[in-house]
Length: 210
Image (cartoon, rainbow, N blue to C red; front, side, top):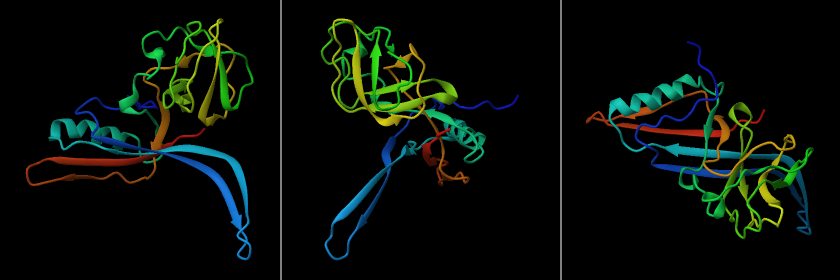
């Protein structure tokens, strides 16, 4: 059976640690005489990650190794989020409502939404995540300031990275267990095996921008 992307992470053993990194394409030039600077912010923004698995025996390790090899280097994609932030810090964790995009043609560093519980203070908290799209169109965004909803259940969210492709009006917004689309950052996959047949697996990934 043909492998279909994006893949879901294996559930065997869990993850020991994830390092998430935000990268912005910002150029800077500085005068060697006055030290005055010119800064140009380009549109490029992406997530990067390093994932380390706990020491594991072969039965669990082979699930992860097969997952990584199935990606065929940088060709395939998979879904990844912050494993410690599967629930929002805000009230959306308990009463999410049915949040959707409020208005078409929205791009940039903020997003207007509706369908939330009305007059909710701290619906989302700084550092929470949202997901736009799903499958091969999933994008992961970090909430940069607390979000309160109004009496109509509407709110505006400041996010990173910017919305690149405008979602349709009433597109669903995921506020729990948010994930984005990633690919391996290298065409090489490595793992180690020690004398006690304990496996070590670490891999690096970058956001898949399509």
